[in-house]
Image 1: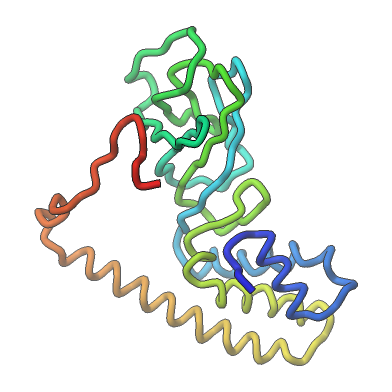
Image 2 (image 1 turned 135 degrees about the vertical axis):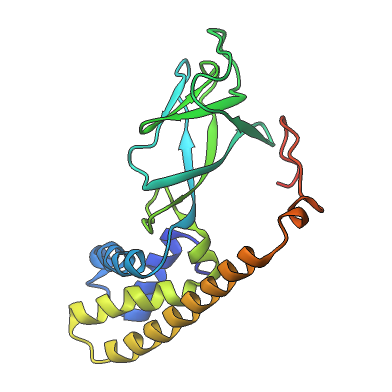
Length: 214
């Protein structure tokens, strides 16, 4: 079973629990699991799917646990376009509707350089707390460590139904968490010792119009 999205994780937890009467509680198990992950691990790269409103010049992101915005992409037809980030007030705006080309964060809102001419689909990438949802269905941690996410949720699931196998899941959770924490610390040490001049070698350069890597 593939576990790469919020819905797939919920299905996996229900499947491993082998209980038809707890499906309504699985989201709570995941939320409680994420509380532990937020205490033990740093911010996680998360992808949220957002939908614009015709004529609007903003997107509401108040429901997301954003700590550091990263990238924003807008879909038009079969193409995904990279929307250029700018500091608020440093770019020109227009009242003419069209596809947004620049954006800035203003509180809990993404503000564009122009009102939208279509109800565009956006993909917003950011660093934030562990908080999967239907609007933020995946993050890099779930992609890279689905076993840990599953174990963390299963600990709470087993506790809820008083299943003694919860001890086994807790043991796996502690083991997986230690491995991930150690790997993260190693990567941070490596980043601190790399010559900054090497960062420009082979660096990917975005076309400001189309993200050709997608």
